[in-house]
Image (cartoon, rainbow, N blue to C red; front, side):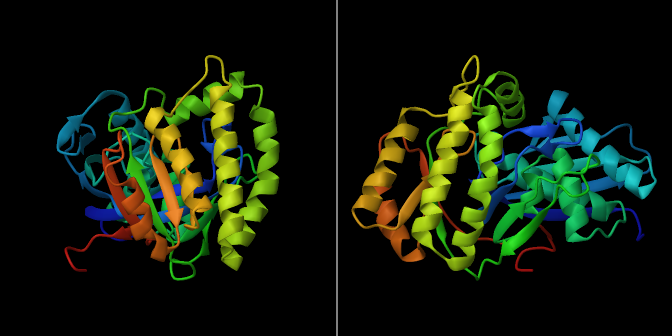
Length: 333
């Protein structure tokens, strides 16, 4: 173990093509289903962690504002796992910044806890393998296990009670298939029902939940094969199918959870119109109102042109397939 001190890490958000929705163990944050995602390069979290000898408790600053309450408690619990691994009890000063809206359905918890996992473990003097980082990040946010890796990433559900096999791994590198993602931001406020609470509510009340879990075993190999074969039509079919199933589970909960707004619905229809017009693009929507248009790189200008000025679209963000979590060593490094 190296010297305890401070570290800075950056991580990209990821968007699931086969969704993670539901837990088989809440305490250990173990997923009920496997998932496959794309890590992107334009939605970034940068996090610094410094452990202090004479600290009086952890502090958390998010996007320049001091955080308290449940978010601070969640980060402190995560840091407790790091402290236990490192065999120390020092308080930490955590500062984190997102280049995109937090808690709005753009995977800020994924990039946030992936960056925190690397920064905190390095600051605590630990040198964790990517697999170990993925397991650690998962305990903060299930989708964070995927943002440890770049490119196309598969998260295994696992079967062990201790969760040691619930871990992500790179399925294909960014260079394997450099797709583009155009994110249509349709809402900037934090969502009314967070993903964690939404998953629990769906598991407890949705009549479709058990069918959703059983269906993952069919969707995962289809998506995996489409990526490895670079079969765009096949990937579009399974991704849209899986996305709509996930939201059907949430909507059929009691009371129903509706993450979409009217612009979300309009954009889903537009994605289908674009594909009918010969543009290679498909949609996916996570737990929030934002629509992600995934397309071949040469189609990105056409997609953006069709979406430019669309009523209700507050921003368009173009992303490429990005790298995994890494230490930040300064600009240009």
